[in-house]
Length: 195
Image (cartoon, rainbow, N blue to C red; front, side, top):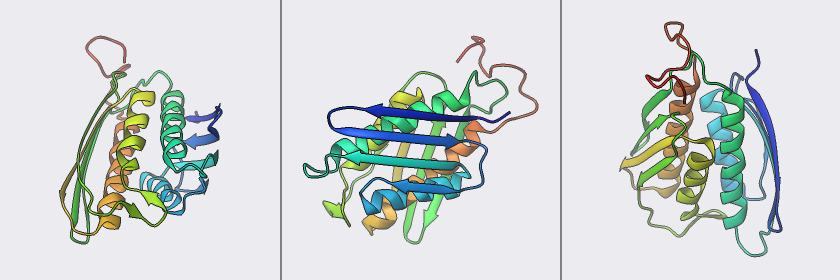
């Protein structure tokens, strides 16, 4: 059974459509209007082995904030919808991911209770056309609209491109693990019986 979702969100600031297939092969078609952000979402797709299409029309004449934040909201909603009842999933995922001098940690619990913790700092205000403050905004939005506890920690690193990319790739791998099926799991992976 396909675990996929298409979500559209239109506001006075953005018009976004996301199509997500959790059990994909790493194919993507991304157009947010922000080159570095496109690159990060392509990395999530490739390293999480999801199929992802993202189309964003945003108020970039203002800045990238609304486009990135709202894309996070829609991707989070697509994750929640694609997961369905969560029967048989591992629920938890984690990844310690190196990228050159950088080491990033991501841990996820698809518990239905949103919570976000990030311990990372960047030296540059921008990487390409991407405001580094928006890393936090994106992952916060994903965690809350997907209903996941998401922890991101940057353990080392000097280059901001590497720091951010390692965090996105660690997220991709941790999410893939959390979404994957474990044949030993019977029903919902919770003592409460629901997530």
